[in-house]
Amino acid sequence: MSIPRLVSALITSSQQFIAFYCLRQLISLIPGSVQQIKSMRLYSLNLVFFWIYFYCDITVNCYEIPQINLEKLQHGFRVSIPFEYGTSLVVFHVFINGQYSIMDLVTEKTNNSWIKEHPEEELYENDEVRVQVVAGHTHGLIFRSDNFKISKNSTIIYTPTTQEDIQAAIKTSETRANFKKLPLEKIFKPDDLIFEDNFESFDTSKWTHDIFMPSNFDGYLGDFTMYTDDEARIFIDNHTLRITPSLSERHGDVSFELPRCTSTPCAKDENANCFYKPTTDRHSGFPAPVISARISTKKTFSFTYGRIEVFAKLPLGAWLFPSVMLEPDNLNCDNRKQLRIAFATSDGLNFHFSAGAVKLVKQSAGEKNFTRISEMADISNIRPYSYHNFTMVWTSKRITLYMDSEKIGYIVNNGEYDEPYHIVLGVSAGGHLEFPDSPLKPWRDFSQDAAFQFDNSFKDCCLTQGGPKCLDKNQEERTCSKTWTPHATMAIKYVRVYAV
Image 1 (tube, helix red, strand yellow):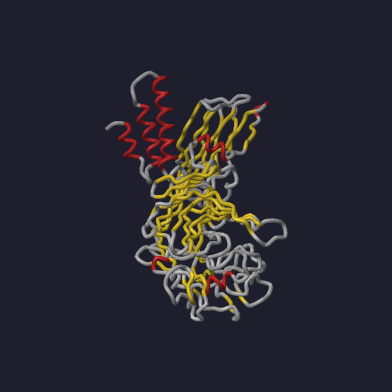
Image 2: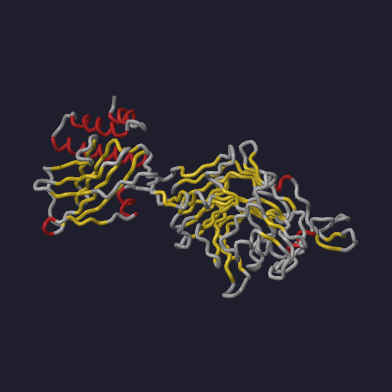
């Protein structure tokens, strides 16, 4: 059997470190000069170490390797880490001055530590040493890398390892992830799958319901949607997440409280988004006329840089738009950023798709109105009744947008988008920032009766045919909206996030 085939056979989830040992023994038997054998040993061990990084799972979910100890002995040096229960073996990989490399497998602990000594290898003043450790733990393979420098009098100076050092040592992904608001100290490889939901059921370990209504205390920022966890509005059917908006039956003269409300980070107070009553403090005296749903991973998962794919059929209906996007964990209330993976609007006749970055910026200090600043890529040949793969590739350099593997545009990332973002899925309606005023539109942006006019355009409106201007039951002409059909439901088959 050839060496590559033997190694491939040995590299399994339960035999990774055995492969190290067997390969070392195999290389030691290869005939040839001493120099050839040393060269082949080094090449082969580095190759296997490379394979561990790129083809094995390296996680730090629970156990984190303590700082590596490097000690200069009378002859040679010693590397060690403390023993921790759950660890069965350790590999030390030592680089001296970035060139000379020593790799050792340790399967037995000594004095409650994992130790390897090299009496034949001397360290000298100004030597720079990098020690990498891979520990076989019950939670998987766990990695650490530390740097040292030998100063005068043989003193060893420890240098904390930066993320740049780790990425220089092994070609890792720049993706970073958070689990339940805590950084996940995992070293990802490009294309690692770090989040997935195929919607076989509603997974509460991944998603939470966002339950709130626009407060209208903070100006004309919110849309006209009240988000609930009503099973008629959000449910899973045939491995598909479905979110269906509907018109509310509530009117402006009745107070009510939203059950299980979660509020929002920038609300005036904890009741602003959870309780409605007619008051002159609100810019609108009419409650949100649309009931829908929205879920997010803000309590469970977020990431910085990655490739997110959403396979979905977008909602189609007058004044609806999808919230298929990323939002920052730390929301800036005066400059609210969104990375929209898929965004589409319709006035009931036309369907317009776009994706990209949006900022909702407060106009000036003390003002309550916001301006929408967008860097969006548009596409016109989308089939609105079909499923599509919407993909956003987000790196430290740029944000690139795809639909069905076709590139539709990109945005330069100048460092503005370099913080953790979580996933948001929902269906929204109306508002003051998404639909330009037009003859088809029944309300005007920043009008105090905008929500009422939106609601009124769907109810008891058109008694005659032809054109947006219709006669209502009082024979008065006004702008009407087309009734939503089953196509108003947004359907999502899966959401996946990969490292980049």
